[in-house]
Length: 210
Image (tube, rainbow, N blue to C red; front, side, top):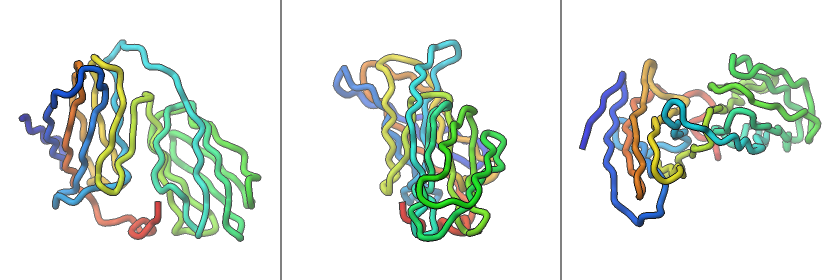
């Protein structure tokens, strides 16, 4: 078992032998106290020079109960995202993030034009009317990604046999934290456990339903 420490993040990795045709990376993500972390983006990037399938899929981030839902989305670069407003009030959504800047004026229902997220990076969404509304879109240059559930587990499906860099990201990771590790997937699944140092909760996300 190898222990890797990068910045404020520690990661433990082990690899399990399982049926020959399995091809997944099963990742458990916890905070510094050992509590499972939800909404952690986990993605595997093939080694340099390896072909990456382009398979962007449409995504949806709705507004309901004066919240964006889901709080965290992960998509491949080139994906189109729709923003239906299911509240009874109008919203003015925007992003100032370098990876995707846009400004959708006040609207209701499905009047907002879908946005194409064509650059990898982290995009923070806000509402110009309701300051506590916030959401995060992680745009990645790979189709091999997943998001952890309430149990802190994410399963990333990858082709059998290949070399990757496995990365994890959470919107509230401690400053300067980096969590990644080279990964070789053979004829079986790989398992990894990450332990992330976190900052204090972001306002508006402590009781966010997603």
